Image 1 (spheres, helix red, strand yellow):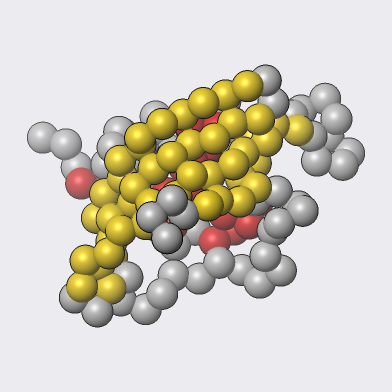
Image 2 (cartoon, helix red, strand yellow):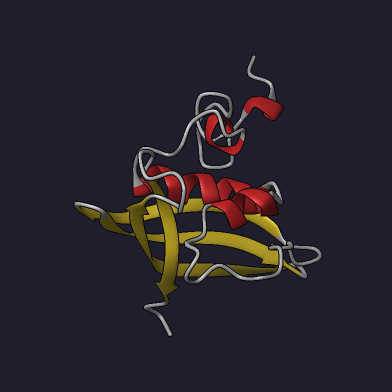
Length: 134
């Protein structure tokens, strides 16, 4: 029987899924993998990973902190389009806060590039997102 602790919030086995990205042993190989690992980081309240994977041009100065009482319920990826070193991922994340169900529908933009001083190691970064339902 599978241990619930081993379940990744995005749907796989945590060690083989987002855990390897959260630990820093590997960088997410695609924008889709990065988006899924960022969702898992939100679920697990891993603000350090969220900061590290946010593009420096749009990265918040303050650490990312979960809202009190927020419970993430699931992730649905609707679309992933990559074009060289840029990509978009459209998703819907469901959560509850204060007992009320909510949905976050976002089209996220990602870029693959190197951070200063790591030119030989390009990685994917979250840039920003738009919200098609608003």
